[in-house]
Length: 240
Image (tube, one colour):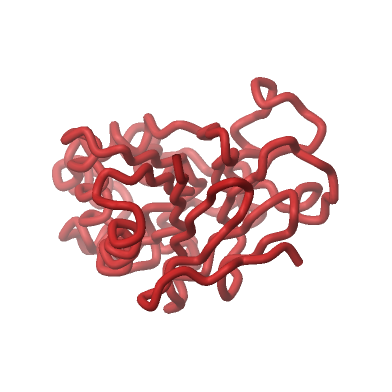
């Protein structure tokens, strides 16, 4: 079975639906689609993205969504409001870090992100459906398919999959992006924004930078070959 994979969405609902349509044209509406996470933040409709993928899951669509580092922020704010992600070198809280995109996410739920933190928390707990927080908090950390291992950021090379830790799976760059090791399966990941899907032999980065106005990558993976799906059909993505 062909594995389809989609890069970091970051609140871009229209781009996500368009990427799905490219997949459907290539593999039918029952195609298996894995998403590398980062559903929320930065883009204009994080709420819509979560609802769209949640409804797809509830209706039995064969869609997998792995957990990205950004997907942890909203449920953590609602349930542990003082939590600061240890992966943030700045040590700043999600709602105080302008570069993370919290304001756009909160605005998508009808909230004013400039209100005082305590009031914002109370309003967010009323405005964000519990099912959205539950969905984000329960996303799996990885998805293993015969064609590839799908994970948000990458893996710690040389460590068994069952021994990988969440902080690496959602945050890793150094030690993974520069590794030439054979990981076994092709590792399909996002997290590090580039211009378009890039194949490095042992890993495939599909974060095309949709958060920054670039296209949302959708790829087809079969028999260890990779194709980028465009409006004009498949384009091979060859190892660099």
